[in-house]
Image 1: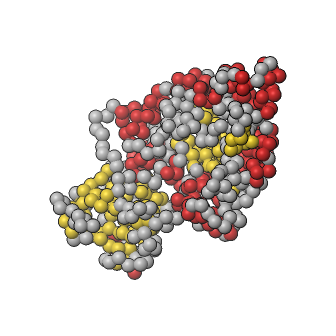
Image 2: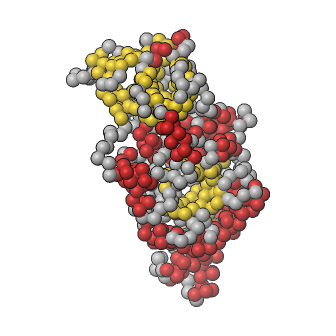
Image 3: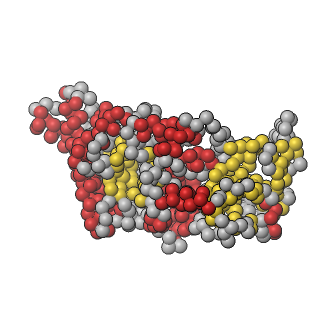
Amino acid sequence: MGLDIWLSDMSKCTPESALAFKRRKHHWQLIEYEAEAVKGTMLSAGPETEAPDVIYPLHLQGWHAVCVGIWGMSLAAGVENMIEVRLTDDPCFTTFTREKPSLFTLEEGFWKHTDLTAQDLVIRHHQSGFPTTASLAYVRLTPLADDEARRIQEDRRSEESKRLIAANDGDSDLYMKRPTTREGLLARIEPYRNTDFRKIFWEIGYGSNALYRSIHGKMLGEGIEDFPRIGDRYTAESIHILTTEGVDPLRTVMEHAHSMGLEFHVSQRIEQFCTPPPWEELYSTDFYHKHPELRLVDRDGTEVAGLSYAYPEVRDFYVSALEDAASCGADGAAVIYARAPPFILYEKPLIDGFEAEYGTGPRTLEEKDERWLMYRATFVTQFMREMRQAMDAVGKKLGKRLETSAITLASRKINLFYGLDVEAWVKEGLIDNLIPYPSDDGHSFDETDMHYYASVTKDTKCKLFPNLMPRRIPPKEFRKRALAYYDSGADGLFFWDTNFRHDMTSMWATIRRLGHVNELKALATSAKQEEEPRTMKLLKLGGYTMVRYSPYRGT
């Protein structure tokens, strides 16, 4: 690597008319600063500044490692701190958010390795559904030798490290980022470029409200006058604007994923039939209200919110939704069991069938009687057969085989209590990817029983991808947990709510390479452990001294 190039004088950005040394609407404020390793003039914009895009001319050639240095913190509750950057030829912007927000430090995030020939840097004040501040202090470029650039490109072409799965909660991703253009949608996929991610699971909606034009109802928010959460309104507005402009959200993100070599799998939570106030209109289905006879029934006869998968009609409703979405060109479908049990209890078909087979009613048995739990699980296994058949039918039309995946619970005990006979699914070849979620129904993040899961998938075609939780932990802890999973028999790793992770500086730089197992092992034994994220103290800011006595002490 060559000597670093520091782009720290942001007053060089154009147009000059978009810059000012005082806070002004529709302008970037220029703030002079001095830090431990760099000094210059940063760009800064407040939550309602609406600063326009500006360009920093690069005039460089060849491959470089690119890092961005950002300043600041959220200045009020509910205000995010984000900056967006892209190169001239990039299809969309990349967002950076501080992991350790502070007015007293700069924080650096790795962006990418890329050829900067004939490229300029475009800087944007991130505009989402929520107010944001944005401050870019510098861009650090490290020239790469030809052999270094060649090794990076060879590594990208290798399939060996492509062992990660991302999960995108499509609804919350839309309301947090509020994309209203095709480019904004592409930005939800672009962070996975040149990473260790092979697949992305994309949730298609909630209840009858879909994030695309579904056979089962309206687009999210159509016909709803009063939204219970401001984020729900932002999501509905985004989808309305996009579809009015002729942009299909599902197909757009799917096509961009495919253009990057990323598999795209549609997914849905298993019990998204109804939700109580204040979300009853937004996240409930007409199907639920029209079919009270299909609802869950507890041991004592009490009706439980939700529909039972003991009934063919319920199974068909769910299967047809994923079948419809997958027909848009997906590579598979994932059933999300982890966030919604129960979905089968003591409904009439179960009671009648059990009595006919065993000569006794299940309510006379202990709730966790193995005979009863195994019998109940046969109905969910039948549902998984129907899912596999549906994906086979879609695949025949698309000319490819579609995978089926299941996001399950932490252990055999918890799975079986809720009707999941994982061993039967694997033995029958009903699933390609098994993803244990380390949580019980109360989301307590119980440890995944890796010994159990590894024994179930060993010497089978089914791959094991444990979900690495919690969402945000230090990079060193991510690497430690990843290695522990690999050592326990994992084929790869799964990341719930990945869309809430890829804006963070060092966190994403670490997660994106967690498929490089040998690299993880080398780092684990390395004596040199760098600070993560990389920060440096500010010495001066806007003419104020930042050391010893805080200039903010009176605020």
